[in-house]
Length: 152
Image (cartoon, rainbow, N blue to C red):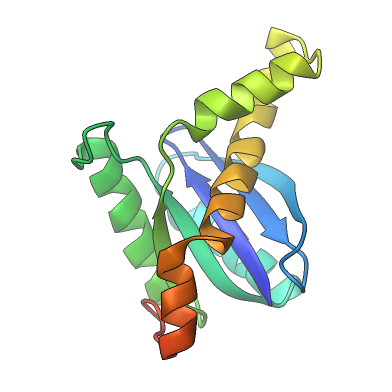
C-alpha cells in the first residue's frame, strides 16, 4: 500500500511517499503554509487521491525526554484536522531528530546551504516514513487490523 508521510512545520510542510510494496521511500514535495492549515490539507487530500494513498503518517516532534511540547500539540491538532478531511487512516509517529538528520544528508551530498532550505522538509518526511514503516507499533496494528483516525 502507498503511505504518505507529513513533516508538519510552522512555515513548510514536507511530504514523502512510499511505493506500493513499501520498499522505497521518496521525498515528494514541500508545501508552504500561508496562514492556516486549510490550503495544506486540501493539497494533501489531492495528493492522497491522485497517488492512491491508503495511509498517512504525520511526524510528531517529541522532546528528547519523551514529553510533548507545543510543537507536538500543533502536529497532533493538524493530524486530527487531516483525519477529518481524508478517507484514509491518519497516524502520528515520533520524528525526533529527523530534520537534523535530513540536514546532514543534504550537507553530505554537497547541497549548498541556500538550496537546502526547501529540500530539508521532504527528506525529513522520508526519514519519518522509513522509520514508521518498520515500527513495532505499525506492525502490531497491522496484525490486529486496527485503523487510525479516519475521516467521514
